[in-house]
Image (cartoon, rainbow, N blue to C red; front, side):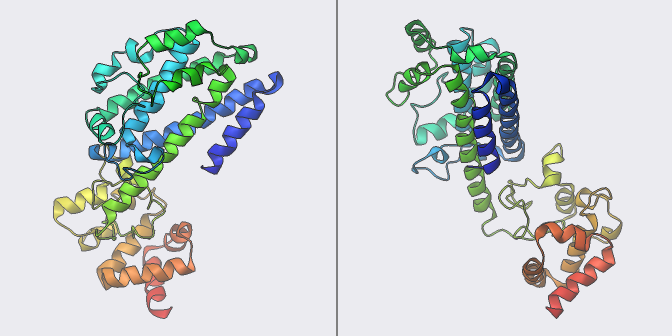
Length: 355
């Protein structure tokens, strides 16, 4: 489990046990949920449609055996049902916004009853962007509830009529792989539900989503030229687990995720001009696109590396990268190469031939 998430989860659980620190605990919980949801946002905004129904760990034991789309659906259907139907005795967010139809989901359940290829087929039919908006609406509704929650309400328990109401809502399948959820939720008090599913459940599934996308990125990069259009080495980039390379559909570098079309400006320009990389362009030294934007701390570092490729070739570039990163951490790249373009190029050449 991610250490920061684990620490915040433990902290909020400890703080809500005492009335004097209860509100502080809720603030920690809200902060944790924001951090976790940001992971979902980055995944939804950064990956191609087919990434959301692929199952790189199909058949494995654990949450990572699912799909990205299923994971989002499952987490927020459970939260919607638990908060709105069980705790508040209210209509669900899914119903109020006609989200099922908009998302394209054939079920309204948590999805626990699905397995294997059923999960993949279910995921293929979902409009992921709309699913994300539903998840966001559920999160916002829960966050508002948490902000207004008082310490006394933590001890609220649930009755048989509450159990019957959840069973009747249709949100939990009667399948043995799902129906146990009703007793599990109703056996807890509100404090217990804050711990699971409003926090730890998120952590487990979002950790699994990270494993899925890391594997998909690794698969996408297999056999692909590791030299990015801008001049960076994908083999040495700190975004290696997030990005599948600008030469694939899994391009999630900084500028790709910031661009409206999801394509890095450097990659887009090279493709339009038929260039293998920015080093083939006569305008590279004056270029201000993408990673070469003057305000970007790594502009000169990226250009220096691209110029190195143009001068010595990719094979020597990758050899140089191995030597460079034996000597320096990736985080030092911009600091070492970014002060002056020509000086950066000289340093790279020196590392390549004098190491």
